[in-house]
Length: 97
Image 1 (cartoon, rainbow, N blue to C red):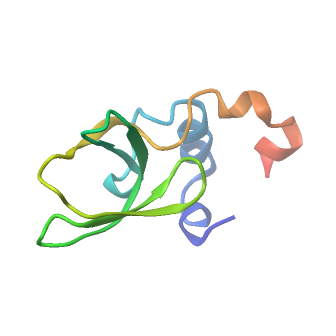
Image 2 (cartoon, one colour):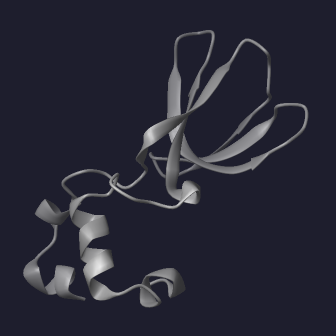
């Protein structure tokens, strides 16, 4: 368990798993980049530079650098990066931990 999760009350952790987009800190907000070629990337923003360049950790599990070209569209999702329905993949024991 991460240090952040250890400092939260158990009820808040369970609520975050059951309803991940209800309340969440901005650092867990999904960011979406739509490229001019029509591709879309979703993930966590790691940094954002003045020239528009950005590094993200994508939901597919790897880091990607975006050059900051003016042709890319970038926005923050209203949803948490934690997927809905995560609890359905956990055993009772795992959820309890």
